[in-house]
Length: 248
Image (cartoon, rainbow, N blue to C red):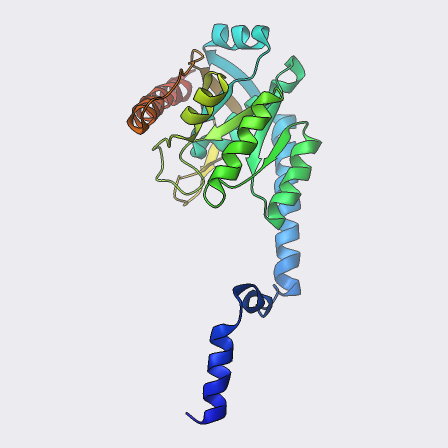
């Protein structure tokens, strides 16, 4: 290695991280176009499901009616695998007075999804549970304080599947909003080969919903308390999803 090459290597090593990132090549025109088309396809698919799918409450209607009558925020909880039917069920409650929110990534793709969320009259809450966990939790707490019920997918966004993390439990404890468990099943769907085996409902299908009794969480005194409750939460969600799946 000659002296000039050595100096260049030292200069690159001293280069600030943000300057190194500037050298990263932007995505090609083809990739940007593909991303835009996929985003619009997803937005259209959501509208198609809203127009063609039927939502049936197969269990826990009394819990739902009581929650809507109280007109106070809750912390809805579901499995990431059932994101679409549970999310569209929550969206259907907007007309009955529930202010629904979803945690959406602060990325560029998240900005598009935020616009889609507002078009469907739900509140985007910007934050990432995996990258900016503390900031995301603060945003969720503030959302509940403003009367919003933020949907929590406790095993997302990366899993492991059907292992509920403690975020929803901590949020319920800090805000006083009870956990609101949603077991969801689509009568017809495609299953994606993803970490959670995502269910993608087919148009003109039926969403079967089993609602659990609202579960208030008091003050937490130790980390293991939140972990124990999260484990119970996962078990209850499994039972509700089984009820929904087996409903006629």
